[in-house]
Length: 140
View 1: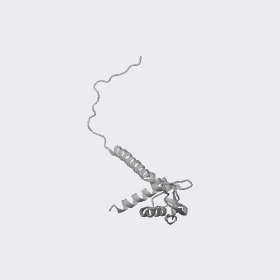
View 2: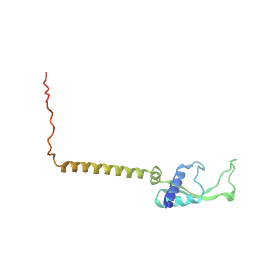
View 3: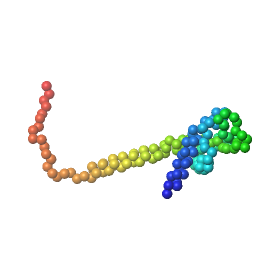
View 4: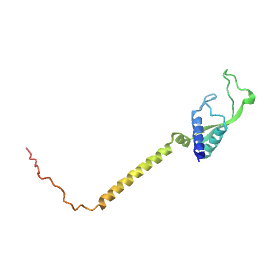
């Protein structure tokens, strides 16, 4: 039941990870090297939310001493960047647009309903109470 919700949440986490990465001479704050990330990025690529920046970039984890990674630990990975649609997903602007449209539509329906009810209402046959004393203002 919650499988699609979990999958969409993983995709959003992957998009956030791509948004956090910085490319200097090396890639800092790189996305995780896990299976869920690869699946989410492939799905995002199909949806047009990310695009390939560089293919087959050698990657590895730097040691705390600053030494280069050992050769067998280097792996080739693809570096992605977010598209405009990916940023919209991160900021959830699509949901805001739909919510704004629904509120505007409900306001329009309420306005039309009030006009229709006003025009179709029958005038009241009951006597209207009038004030007993009418005060007239006289100019100076």
